[in-house]
Image (cartoon, rainbow, N blue to C red):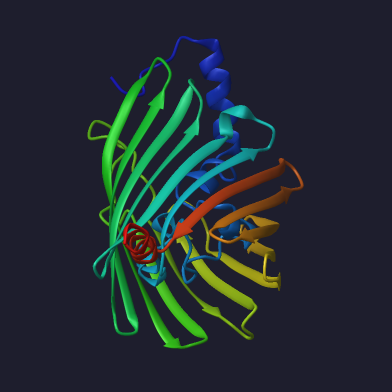
Length: 290
């Protein structure tokens, strides 16, 4: 049976550490946005389009004009068991944007694996995204729990400079497992992004996690040069500051982010993104053949 008593002392010690860090570590990893760019902006990403939008608001994938493949890794508080890896891919099929993403958190004692598939479509100024997720939670010597979750999001382009968005994750309040009384959290987020100038993005949002108090997030990205970006952000609950830098070279993007908590220490985020225009690639290939 899932969650039966573990006899391994090592497992018990690790679970105690996880329980003590849960408000900061597990909450931060399981369902908040993946990606160094978004993290360095304080996770204020509900109205920001990105290669990892499938994890923050799938509707924003419809705002991407290129196919992309991205990988992500983070290192949390110098504890190997709290690290995570992620992958995301966005494809444009006619006018529909199909996204696939996967994450892995933890180690052999406790890990959470997540696979997301989403579709997004833009109708004039409104983008809508619907996603289905597969969740697998494993605790050593206690078994594996599996379930499905559903997410839905929307983004409205109020003007060329302002976007408003809303997103809900686990909207059907799925259980961790059919045999377990525990539920995955329901997370609701709403906010906007604003472009005061062409080279800057200001994003803000309010997040309500069913387990925690309201969290206000504010983020800023500034394009210093054509190839370099500076980012910062802040959260209210828990109070946390973020920062980061990004580099762009043709179709490649490398992003690094960092956050610091006065009790737990530092978290490092790293992403690598490759984007390309499939139509341009096909056109070039055709011209080459001729």
